[in-house]
Image (tube, rainbow, N blue to C red; front, top):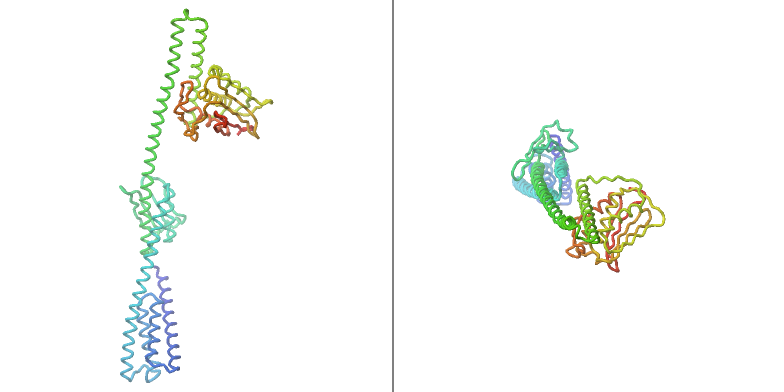
Length: 473
């Protein structure tokens, strides 16, 4: 507490004593004129002493009011009047008892008031500390934690502060850091295992109150606990991400090896048969083996292209090379890739009457159509129908791939485009795939500013719809 503040408080207390004694004297004179006895007048002064004790801080003012009451009673109400003399032994005893009673009552009242004040202050402090501890539980992020602590300190002490963490070049300070030329009180920020930094409070030579000191130390403690929790969470998160990355890498390698084995085995068998028994085979058998090799090579090329695209997407290197492309040309290129894979399935293509041209990366959009058509082939039996429709809806060009297969299982509907999502069964051609095709479709379509969705048709089968903005992104 500064000297000026203490002087102002003393002046106010003295004024309160004078006002209460004046009112007690006036009240005593009034009841004396009404015929009240000296005992009643003394009670009026005793009441004034109690009021002084309640309205001021410290029993000194109560004792002073008691002495002043004795003097006033002697001057105004004992014989001889208006003189500081006492002739009656009864009056002396009366004043003596009054003085003792006033001093004891004032002291007890002062102590009681002080206890009440301490209890109230303790309650406020406990509420404040609880709020500080509770707020730190819900804050995440190193910077947010530190700035919240600095703000708490300024709000409840009025002093600027600065936080420096070990191993961190950045300093954190409050907006009032211009006072940094002041002397500071440095408090360590202690974590569970080690000291994490320090907190400096710029209070100059001011003496902190108990509550201010408690707030600063509590904030430093909560800073240590919150930062320790933040570092632990970050370490766990890095470990989790590393484990997930390792799991995905293992899954990818396992899936690639598994999915390459089947077509490579077929290629090896067909090519060996052609090489070893070419002359013994009929022309139809030779064409059949060549067609099988071609189909497997197309599948492998599409498979490798998907892996390369997924790698680019994962590394954030999927760059679009947009040019104005005619939709009919893009669709024709995609269907030409599928001609050998469709086998006996019937592909119905429906295009708009007018020629549509829109900015797109034609190679990637062809990949989207090939993936959707290949997905339809995998999940439809032979002699089934697959529809590819293109239309205009508002400012978008909408592509639809529909089939009459068994539709999409409900358990994978919500994660169909997440990658590595494959149905447990219902693979018609035996090539299960890695579940990357639809994830790549989503990434390519969204990179164009479009949207893609999947749904089951009421009459059966699945429908995949994606749209591209007609005016480009």
